[in-house]
Image 1 (cartoon, helix red, strand yellow):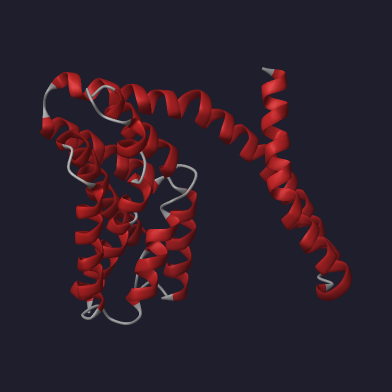
Image 2 (cartoon, helix red, strand yellow):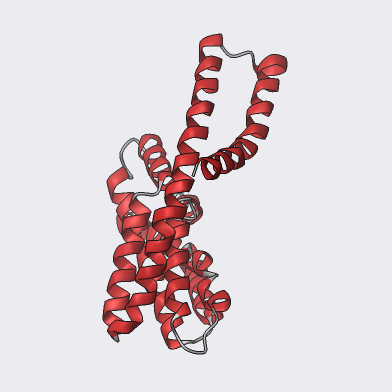
Length: 231
């Protein structure tokens, strides 16, 4: 276990170190921020390394196995509505817990001076991704091509962009991007892989992947619809 933690910590350090070095060089050569702020950055970097290490360990030892186990068990229930319902709930719960989504919705709330509230936006994003996660599970069960769902989703996005108020369009696309974070991705992928692994004649590679690209369309559509309704 100790060597496993050490390995994960080394992975995180390798990921964080280049950015830290760039900021340190900028501090020395260009920015020259107050020394107290620079110390806060260094302390925050150490906390990020520790937090990300524990987060990745938790994901690999807890979240991924339980996601695959749930996905593998669902087909045994022989109930498509149950699969849809559980996929929707899991997608929604993972999204509202996603750190990237929380940061985005908080900043939009501040910039819009409360006109686009944090709580409303995070729930809209959660509903959008949950709906498309459920549709992705239906696709795996029924076996039709993902290209059909992707095509339909992007056609809807293009059509809605003509009717959505201009200030909501960039928010919508950012909402789609931030859902592909460290909380949502492992849960959705493991759920899809677990589901496809127990269906006879199916490939976990072709069915279990591509779910994130599909699910990220949901928040874009949901936020655009919110903009149309609000204005």
